[in-house]
Image (cartoon, rainbow over all chains, first blue to last red):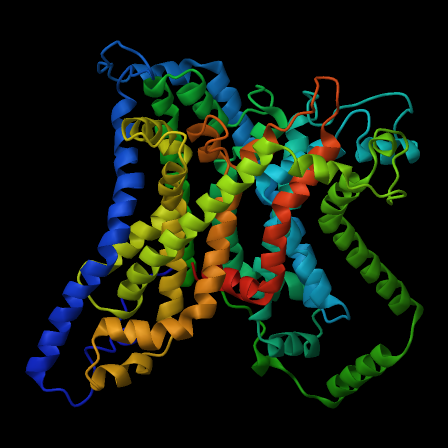
Length: 317
Length: 309
């Protein structure tokens, strides 16, 4: 996470040997100008499609703008925020999002560590297992949701079929995992865990592989058992990789949209905060009112990102 | 970072200690019941992991080649008995879906080409050149990679309407750059930084301009990195859903993800799952093939990019 101000490695141009001083100055100036020329296209794009719209979202959140409305929008102060905080659907979506985020990140981390430890050991066919881990990750989120929707199907879904054959479910009964209010959120969480755990495992595996083996040999000689080894050595040494993985997963989970939308649309039992916002913005065409939760999401994600980056910084020093 | 208490210098090498170690080693080489049980459990775990990661896609493939009569039954057939290509034929004869496939292809390639073009230039500047403002720009780009897209959906909607970009392919390409360009710049900057500085020094001493050095020396060496980054950006654009759903209206610009999400049967009574699975397999195959071809690089590239930050 650290962006270090590099003085040596990236300065091929300032350290060209045998050049007189005057020339070096020219090169530095040339670099200064060229550097800016090269980043300007990217900066323009980011400015036009990200920074300006973000600024606009902030501004719109204080207006009563509607799409396709002849009425002249006016500033309404904090009214949209007051409305948002007074809306039960906002709070239930927030609750769903927090439940989704905490459970997926916790399950993915736990399963990810287990799978990473298993793959880390040497066995024949390890390459195949590692390759298979890329499959759920490469499948688009919408497709994953569609695959599981079919597996969850109340009548012909494979999950109910297995449960019935194992006598865990009465034959002749139908149960729709993804739409029943009691299991809908759990069903969505299960899809995300399936899709993302392998990726988590691969990230953690990379973290495991940089731990030097002599540390384990020393522990072995000292008589530490496997469990002690894991908690006293593996886990602390894995911490940097774990924290980075956690940041990205948490930020990703918090803005979940596709998976829940495809499985359950705008249904309130599983509605996430991103779906709530999108419905208000586009579905109801209330750009002004919808911009308030949009800003709230942005602030939440920002706080999460900064907190995590701080954590990592502290860990590294 | 917190370090462990296990330091090599704490090793005691008394004779009892050495005997104990030897004893443990000897025990390990023997074949015990405990070891067999451990082995079996380990392989069961491997089988379970494989089943867990691969079954849903396997099931999609099986469902997509199973005749409708064999599909909507209980208990299900876990292995295909008779194979049919009807569902694929239906998918390929579906004009709307084929148009969506074409739209997705254009949008994804367009996004990747622009992201790689701007991204390479920007990453070269930030990875290899020294100029004032470089660090803040890099921080800005990094923060853009964590940016929640939903925060700008409303204002982008207005922006697209104002500039006649709503429901167009070029409109989608432009908004897709919000996530693919920062990603590309970030990964390529790390990639360029990792290359030794001597590389272009020789060219510079010989009087080449920095742009020449980039073009003649760095780019040829960066091709593997560019391919991997491009593939990852392609996956991102191909799989994107929120923008595609919000900024398109019909066949003109709808992408495959939206098409699949809206896939229905020919009539209200027809269950669409067989065709849906066929469409899902069609949409996923290009990504899987690409990922499997460059899998080694993806694992190392992703982990390098992600672990470094």
